[in-house]
Length: 284
Image (cartoon, rainbow, N blue to C red; front, side, top):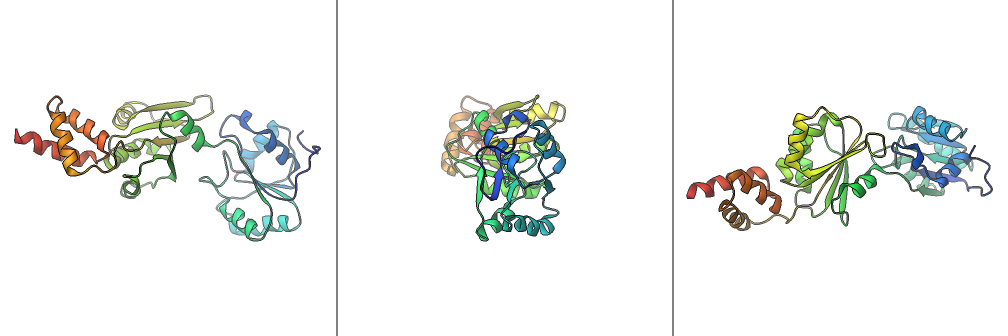
């Protein structure tokens, strides 16, 4: 059992990353801190209980999530006021990344309590590391809205951003999300990272139109998904640039092929490029 180690941890709040699938991805430091906790605040005590049982850690746990935060936040702050060691975990990965916990950390710091972050597993970073897309600049935007119009509105905000985009998504919305990305962002390179660190881990990367074609034919995917979207090749090319690129492409390619090539190269919307290609092709 991981407790009563020689190095005692100080009182305070410990924001602790836990595995996103493979329980072997827990860090030694996390085990040390969990083993000395006076209370472990969990998104779901049943999920965290499996991790604690795996490493024979027997410490008190309480549920702390969006639905009971108003009631539980004062209790956790009271633990800190009594000089206790409070460990905050989410069901998987690093707390506060599309998970509860921000208010607790904010209030703990505001009250002057020690707050320590224990780094570890993160679906965001695992996806970036395996997607094969640029990682020098990236934006994490969590979950996109459920509805098409709202989703497209958010994507529009990111269209000209010269950075890789990262989103969390659910399997049943994946295909609609990819179609909205193609319409709004153009022909980007995209990686669909599914079930990371788990038995059926899969990373499928390619042009967004090819991924759409695949998922239109394949069975509905299962598990948790991270979408990594590559940056535009060039940001917001002018109308003149688009026309020049289309004229050159149409000399050797069909309209469909020319549109795909120019959309991917300019980052312009496919619908806009297609309409312009039809106008230019009609001039001949």
